[in-house]
Amino acid sequence: MIDPVREDPSPRDPELARASLRRNWLRLILESRTRELEQLCITHPEPHAPHVLLIRACCRDLLGDPHGAKFLRGQGMRIADDDFVVCFTELLLAADTPTKTAAADRAREALTECGPDDDYPSALFLLGWTEVRLRRDLSGAIGLLRSAADEARLRGRSETFRLAQSNLAFAQTHAGLFTEAERTLDGLPVSSSPSDWDIFEGGLPQANLGSIAYWRGDYDDAIARFEEVVDDSGPGDNFEALARLYLVMSLIALKRQDRYFAAAGLLHGVSKADKHGIPWDTLRRVISALLAHAEGHDDRARTIAAPALARPGAAVAHAVLAELYRVLDEPVLAAQALRLAAAGALPRYARVSTLVTSAALRSVSGHGADAHEHLDRALETAAPERILTPFLSDDPLIGDLLIAHAHRGSRHDEFLGTILERRGELARRRTGVLTPRESEVLAYLRTTMTAEEISTRLGVAYPTVKTHIRSIYRKLGVTSRRAAVLTADAR
Image (cartoon, rainbow, N blue to C red):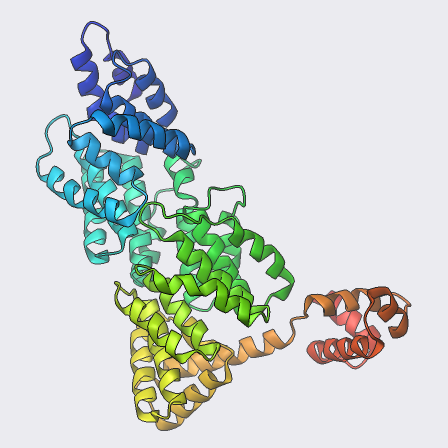
């Protein structure tokens, strides 16, 4: 549909050119014609008109040039009247939550006043897309995206339909409606190659499936999904960045210490600034603190995490942070993080996480009955969508609490049995994971070097090397050097 738009811009009739651009710009962006749209703006009879500048700003942002987008947006906003184009440009480009929230409120009004030159299906999709990122009303966002998908289907807009369905699945995932999200993803039309919008979002369908796998405790599947998405040359502020965060959490869940150094590099690439209403810096800080704790650097974890307590509006991150503070034996800070989490719209899986953390805190403080009440509520909330991860911490307190709950009897005995079985599987697997130093020692065990020679080569004390060797044997379930090498090679 680009050709009719190309034919409309004419020096003889600038008004016709403006109307054509206004009618088609959102659709062209969604249908992966961004570069051609920008070229149309440049050759427009009035290339410095405010609307043309704003549309160019959207093109620049979508094509990975946030600096150019910022300058063009500033030029256009300086002289533009507040109307449909201004409103939906703000939905695309506003970085901070208050500005995006105000733009979303104006967009709702603009949708009730759409005229023949306004692209209603695309605008409906964009409002739903924005509301998901604002996380203030996920059920409303789901309704908007369903409506956008229906409108696109009725009008034969196949690409808008696909994007609406893809984002609908994300909204359902973020709400913790995993079964519905999987159903939506199963029916998602297949795109032959990533569109401009797909690249802009950064691997949304796989990130969705990976997130579901993570919260269900299927960490290997999650890692495989996220590795398909992660590209460390990406902008660090889209679903590729979300995949990085979840990939790191999955590695921590499996105690993959051999990958912690690379994980820190992935986190370093996540944005330190908000974009599209998403508090990337808070998310990055919380997962970085989680990684520091996993590496045994608890003081560093506290330092990294501290600023996250000063920023509301990241319910899932604060739910994760509450559990981290609990494990760090900081009950006051854990309670503060729980309050921040509760202040937002908590998706089902984050709600489960806060209930498990609350149960553990009450158990430690001597309120056993309250602890079991919270744990039972967590099981009730988690069971319909098989949410396991909040129960799978290797903290002995969580294990003891779950076993005690099973002895008390629960309405959710079958689900509780699934949790305990999965905890056992993970415990056996985690004990077989070698530390980076143990892996290094194992490499030397493949040679004819003695333990004393290995200690000299590594520059560590002989008893330390012997300790590493005993740990390797224990984790691999062997009693000799030869068996350790053969068992490691067979894995």
